[in-house]
Image 1 (cartoon, one colour):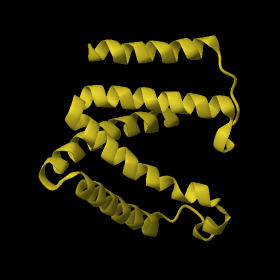
Image 2: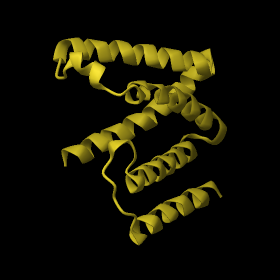
Image 3: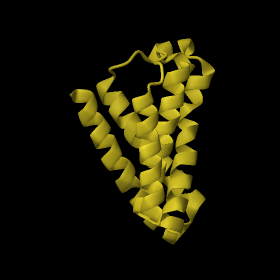
Length: 141
């Protein structure tokens, strides 16, 4: 249940972030917005890190380099999302983003990539993904 609540919170925040970032980029530009977003996020993260310290900071050396650069996806996410919102609107952009997220997660789980447990693909999952894709197409018409 706790995981579902965090997922719901994340989904709400992704949508709000996209809209806020799109409005900010109207004023200062896309790449400037990406920079501001990440500077603010870094600052807040460091403040929380310095006060909570729930992890093992010295363990960074044990993390594979590939996973340390995972935050760079955030740069692509923010810029792509704010650009998509400008071009096709918030609802369409978020709908496509969600289908892309689920599709990517579906492939990663089915292949067992990046240390995820390999979960065999079922007909139901494939049908659900296709229905979501069809829903996005219908939404666009």
